[in-house]
Length: 108
Image 1 (cartoon, helix red, strand yellow):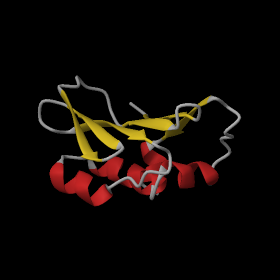
Image 2: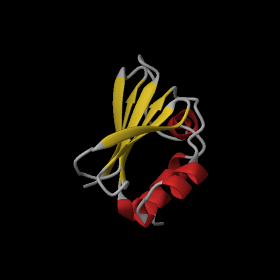
Image 3: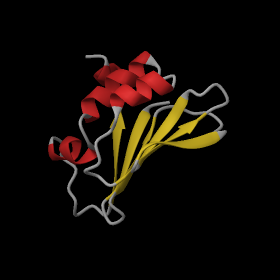
Image 4: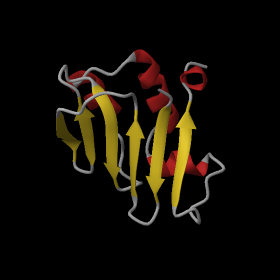
């Protein structure tokens, strides 16, 4: 699966789908950041409730299993979704946008 970032500017929220799997639980990492986990506590996706919310990379990697290719993708989005969007061609006028994050790009 290609990692996918879905941004909803109207709702001021985003979801980073890291890979396919069955979500068995959702946990709050910090206020405004939730993770969807599989049965092995591997992060399948990250929900960000506020595009300016800091994504807590250290906490994610300490508390949960995140694959190395996905860590590189998370580095691209750092420190938050707003900063990432500002570096892209995505325009807030697109009510709902999707940005694909290829593993190959993330590993560069």
